[in-house]
Length: 33
Image (cartoon, rainbow, N blue to C red; front, side, top):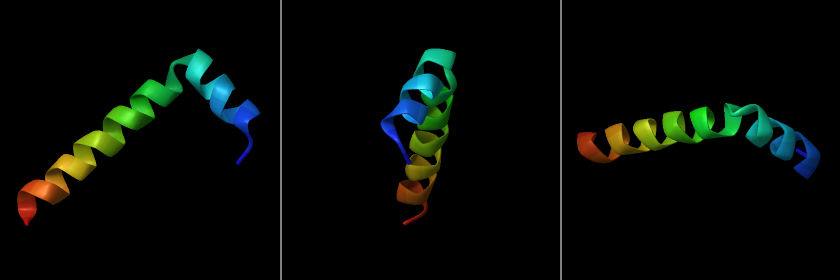
């Protein structure tokens, strides 16, 4: 995956959404243990 794509996603505001989803899933997995 190129940095250009990540940069475009960040500028489009998609990266924040993606990070929020990953953070939420990580938190759920941590809570389940």
